[in-house]
Image (cartoon, rainbow, N blue to C red; front, side):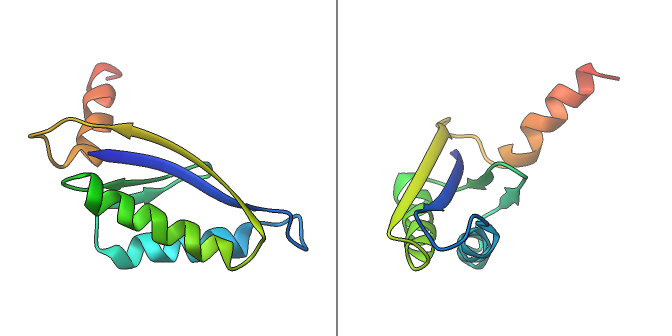
Length: 98
């Protein structure tokens, strides 16, 4: 399954969220799951809900260390039996653009 999520602190002392977001991305990268970070979302790929949601939960906790309130946006693509979709989905679209 693929999960794209965005986690951000709310109500902190600064209007910059980069440091808090970096702590969340660090959690994702240290998880060992395939992942990609863009300007708006971090996407992770895992075998099941428990594996992926554990990483999301830990990323949220990392951001909570920065602010009293946290915003989480999450989108999931649940497709049992498919792996390596983080890149494969993009490659399928790109093949139509050639």
